[in-house]
Length: 65
Image (tube, rainbow, N blue to C red; front, side, top):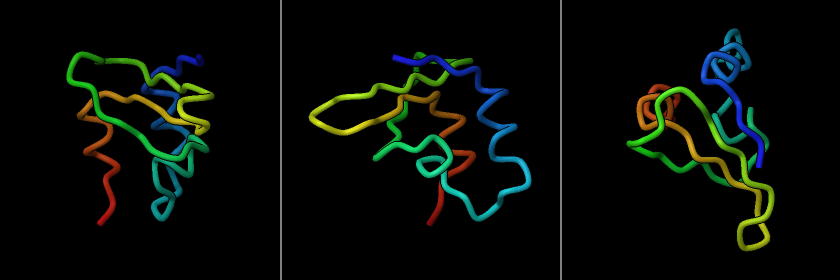
């Protein structure tokens, strides 16, 4: 499991308005967590897929569609 500060994730997305949170983190899906506040967790093998768990506010900020 990898932990990334939210500030690092936001810096990764700055200047890339057409990039999704999933694409930036190179994961299949990003799940929201109401209890996380300042870190994103990237899990390498959940059911054979790489996923991330991010604070709800961060996921909503970069929500597409």
